[in-house]
Amino acid sequence: NFKCFQAQELTSRPLTVLSGVNGAGKSTIIQALLLMRTALQQHVQGMKELPLNGPHGLALGQVMDILPHNMENVPVVLGLSQEASDLQITLTGQSPGARYLGMDVIEQGDFSTSPMHGKGFEWFTFLSANRTGPQDYQPMQSTSPEFLEMGENGQFVAEILEAMGQKRVDPRRSHTNNPDGLFHVQVGHWLNQLLPGWAVKVERSPNFDVLGLRFKKQQHFGDEWLRPTNTGFGITYAFPILVAALAMQAGGVLIIDSPEAHLHPAGQSAMGQFLAHMAAGGVQIFLETHSDHIINGIRLAVLDDRHPLQKEQLIIHHLENTPDGTVVHEIGINERGGLTQHPADFFDQAEKDLANIVRRRFPTQGNN
Image (cartoon, rainbow, N blue to C red):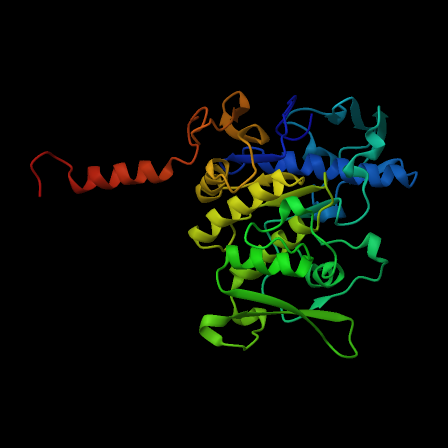
């Protein structure tokens, strides 16, 4: 009973991709995960109410806004099953205009050790589609290192990069061209993979609690470090994804909305391959995308002997609007990189447009 879903069960894999037309329910699935994360954090603190707005950038409005159409006074039930462990969160008991719900949290088995409970960015990070664009400086958090967050807009990425700089990356996520596991080294190599020629550093501002990122592209600007405002949106939108994925503890949960934002098609394909490598390296990734280049990059990774992602580690949920509600198609990849099914509107717009171009160029047989 959550928004467009009256009842829905989804399978997740190390890399779980959500696709479909606008308004089909992809963001609803992500919001359910974010609500569960928030509920667990509230539960640990002894809270009995769950806010619908605020944490992780959630802005769900009032109780009436999250219930399925024409339904009132029904419980919203969210749950996760993980091997022999289960989590069930039942949300009830408030007026339609309330901005919070009473919650009952039941954990069975060993779910208390789930990364959904973990503290800080190394266990759980959500990056929204509206990530922070080019900014000269970023704020710092007034908290101990174990409670640092990336921020849903990636607004603290400079602080995370500085905090992690001399730590070691999970070797399964090291770049194939460089086994050096130091975090700042791996960030540099993967950045160069995504955006060839670019390098990054963190710059402190004297007497102020802010940090800045500086980038350079050696073949064009030599040793000149550039402000983010002089590099464009693609780098600053992609960079928090790179840092978050490399920083994750094994089993940590990373949720990304639109990793393709502001990236050139080649960069989108490289991003898909990068995320595939990270998922194979122990990160639980949930990904919402409208990019066939992201999907094809993932498919390339499955076929590339240098990438460890196995086809069994990937699942794509394609959401389709129908008169009877949202239908979810489960799609996998076979041993040749092909898709196990092609539902309607699954990244087929290019073919449709090309067919229409041909018909309009040659409306009748015999025309030039």
